[in-house]
Length: 402
Image (cartoon, rainbow, N blue to C red; front, top):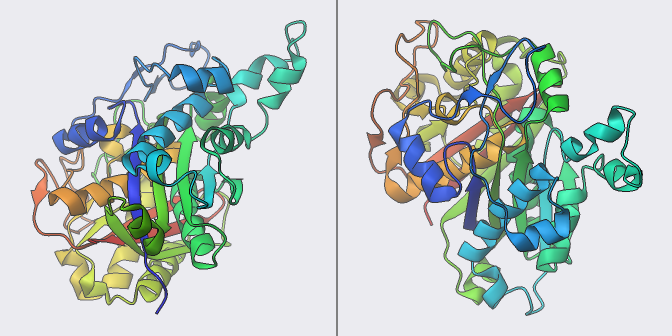
């Protein structure tokens, strides 16, 4: 039997909380507090102007000394990573004892904000080299490797909105193959003018609210943030006497091979990725107690994800409480799957499922048990977290109680 893969640390920075516990409390309240007119760049010539900006973020001075003050994306990721590694007691008990730490990060835009001046063709004198460096997706991973002495694999993924979940799945694979003893798996993105122009061009945003699975839904709203999980082999965690928060029992990745932006018909790729995760976890569909859905609030995604859940879980589908946290925190892009996986672990810990914000008029075509109004209380032992992204990328992870 393969050694179990466990989660020992969580870290998050989001528009609704500067750490994991603040974010979790806000998710349980289920109010759309993340969204406000953007202030860090001018949106007057853009189609959309409301997003999930993080207020009052103060980066750690040590992180600023390493990454510089202008690399907001990397600083968000470094803050979430610090929280996860400190919760897992990695520095005190593991980092200098011969254990190999790996880092797998995921992002859609990386550190492009600090390269915007260079991209605009008017770099300040003497800054071209440093600004050009902002085009590298590897910056945050490299900074973290130096900061925490990571001698295992260090890499960055970009699988659109499935990126955060994909990083966790990739970490599990590398741990099982013996490439590292522990891996920091994280996702991050910051809002910038460059990113916002591209996101606006997709025409998938709402000007009012994210309403997952609601009859009136008309799009998503993008947010910035970072999420991090320390994932390690159980023997490593036991050796360090680390707190085991959850067991990562199943992961899967695939692609629709269908269309750049449209979901596959009836959620075919999502069906396959959930089935593969269940197969790896050696779980029957009826053993899943809760699903943290991708739930973007767009018309096609919510319908096809519902169809996929019905196809995979059959008669059990209507009995599974389902949430999407995007109505509360927004679509965190590269960090979305990371923070949703964190919420899944906290559901196992606290026995509460966050409600779907703004779900007031359920779409009859999305006829499943979506959690509304108040957190759903219960004894949840197994949670599936689901992600999908542009380019047809799909990812799923399944976590269970230790």
